[in-house]
Image 1 (tube, rainbow, N blue to C red):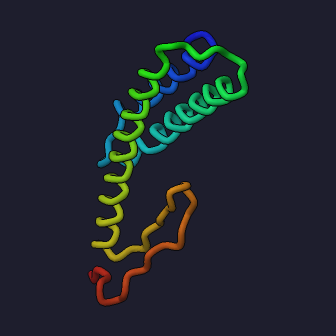
Image 2: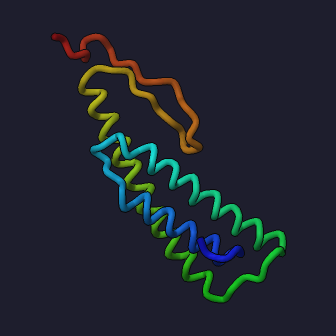
Length: 123
């Protein structure tokens, strides 16, 4: 890893997110745990950078703004990938007549969607 400080935190966050995006496979659920762990590391680094900057523990490097813009773009890309994967699996589950585990924007579980009996797959 890079030396401590907000710029290093942002660089680390970008590296973690690049790894998560690089190994992402929406069609392969086995990759979800690895992606989740890498995204958690990304969030930890972003929060550390935010704390260092807002609490005045470190100087803010001048070129950090461009890195933050790049990181924001990467986060948006990752969000679209995850949302697309969730929609795909939600659709597949609905087609198969199962209960769908759903989450809200904060990642908390919402009650699942139970499909009416006439839509359940028979045989």
